[in-house]
Image 1 (cartoon, rainbow, N blue to C red):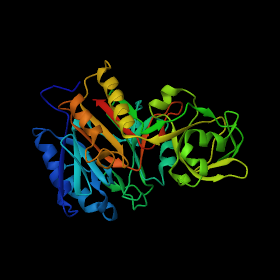
Image 2 (cartoon, one colour):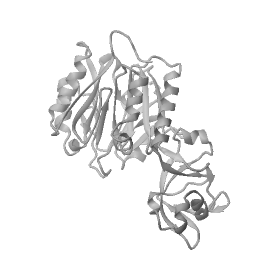
Image 3 (cartoon, helix red, strand yellow):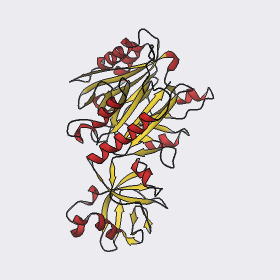
Image 4 (cartoon, rainbow, N blue to C red):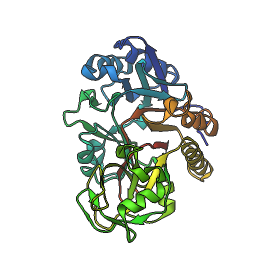
Amino acid sequence: MTNTNAKIKVATGSSFGAIAKDDHAKTAVEKALAKLSGQTIGSVLLFLSASYAQNPEGAIKEAAKAAGTMQITGCCALGLITEEDWVIDSEGAVAMAFVQEHSLSPLRLARQLNSEFPLALCLTSPNAAEIAISSAPEKQFGVLASDEFGHGPFSIWQSGKIAEQEFIHAAFPENSNAKTMIAGGLKALSSPLRIGSHQNHSFKSLDGKSALQSLQDFFPQLNSLDELPPYQIQVGITKSNSTTAIERGHYEVMHVASIDKAVGAVNLSDDIEPDSFLFWGIRDREFSEQTFLREAQIMNSAKTPTADFGLIFNNLSRGAGFYDGRDLDFEQIKTLFPGLPFIGCYGHGEIAPGHQEKTTVFHYSSIFTLVSI
């Protein structure tokens, strides 16, 4: 349900072209301001395309001048989204302007008011993600900024300045209500299986069976172990054996890095924590589409305060490249939340509250947050 009040509190704008010009930021902000009927602006959430990452300062200054405030927060990303459209592989900017009395603010400043924030926005580079998440006790949602290859450079900014630590946290106004849905993108081929004997990133047993035998049970085409490169095999690692938690994306994605035939061990792309569960999985378009639709319908039907705006962070592996030229996640939001202003981008990973952790990083997922202010 979207807000139907006459005086809107937030609005979006966008501007795109063939070249990464600073004027795109100015135009995007001006389009947002035009929808706010002369209200004083307190802050702007600004996302720029990846080509700005080397030198985003000019665009940030243009956005600040247009808005009349230095409270400009955002990052660079390969693809950009507003309720009007999504764009990948084009240069430009999208902006969400907040009126003064309902402004987005740096979390560190908001804390000085002794307020509690049920959910904080986190924008970070992949390199700083672990530090970003652990440095704030609040539950967080957001995105890992990305270029095409996830190598950088990555630019994150707040209060109109580049964040040297490569991450920021922002708070919505006091007494705001925020709710986040997580739509996972990895289809489970097995139930959660308890990881047995393991060391670092290698494990030898899974639910009492050899790791290699379990892998072959769910990937029979690997009977020769030569038909599919191991790094294309994906697994979900979770601290819970709850299938519901897995269906809702509460897991960490890893890849099979190699297979040790001699001892029947499987080596993953990262270290394994004690008492973890694993499920074998694959990327599947129909599963991803249905998962997003289910979670969005649950959010839409929940009896929550009327939403003023939304924020969406999609993984780079989703969108048009995954859905044959369409972004079905975007289309479902447009259908379920007509008239809702929303903004977002495509990233290298998605941040949201986890099943047992306050905050975790998701992959192949879509994060959508509704906010009432």
